[in-house]
Image (cartoon, rainbow, N blue to C red; front, side, top):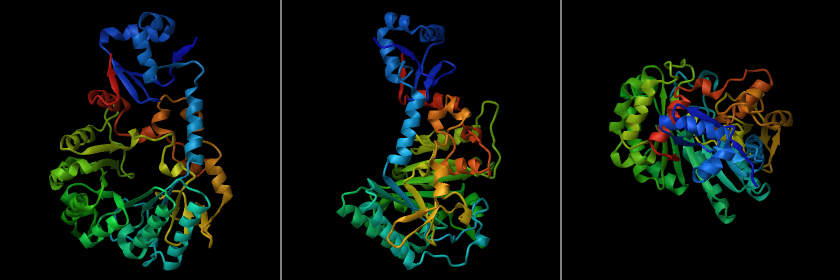
Length: 440
């Protein structure tokens, strides 16, 4: 006979029982809560008195087999997805140049050479690398992720030829191919949009810094902003790119959210279902939360976008697949315009962060001391994370922050300490939307 126990990841939030391991919730009447808590402490009685509800609790993860160790499962799956999964995500910086100088950008434009385009030799070496990864490393799929600088500044010289080569190779070897770009969209025109379809470039992250006035104050050329142009381009992408998915990243400070809802009216109704709105606080701006742990204005704006037909995202509560960040995978690398290899695209490209180089045969030569420090343990292998009921929601720090902590360059910081939406708000919203929740 199977013996059962409560999940270690059960969390009571008022009258809601939430399980972070399964991301499931049940809402109870106030009069039911004491009985439910009693039965969770007396599972044999629970099973005898209410076997159908008991089975429901098993299905939702609130009750589990005594011999199933959830933490060990998380640790195993983390090792599996970070070290064994051969879905290769290759981030490529065609340049670190940018046509804008956003005040919050981590890249110091003053230190970047005036012309730092990836040259043809590096382009050919990347093609060799893709061939090597497919034929020698036997990757299961390939995702190209264009970054920068402004990634599309050298679209025809770098992005287009590498993508065409990769598509053909993946097709011949029956390997799935995906193509994504992070871009400010300034250089995109209808000719380029047609070319996007040639290379299956149908996934975009486009930053918007607020309403027209705010966006143009952040992104401009000698005071001339391009908000109208960028929003028109975003609409054109949605209308003309096959199977498109756009992440519209709202970079916000303490003023941005006040008027950002005007952006809604600049995006055509038929395009809104193709867009995820991702709210990201500018990292230099202090946390702005009330006594309940929420930025109420952020919550209101998020709901306003949803009501208008958009899907929304927030970094603290996204599906993580047993790791904090896509870069946590061994099969994720960043190739800079000069051919040097890095792990993270959210840091500068200094020599001390370089993890390797591409060799002439397409293989990579790694600084094994750095790689070993990064991958010897799960990034959440610390007492605070291992004992946290919210571990399945975040999986600790990303691999870059973990490495920096390990070498004494930084200190550990919980991801949820920087969140402006509370767990309570997330769970309440989940129940209210009836997403993966059950009313008993």
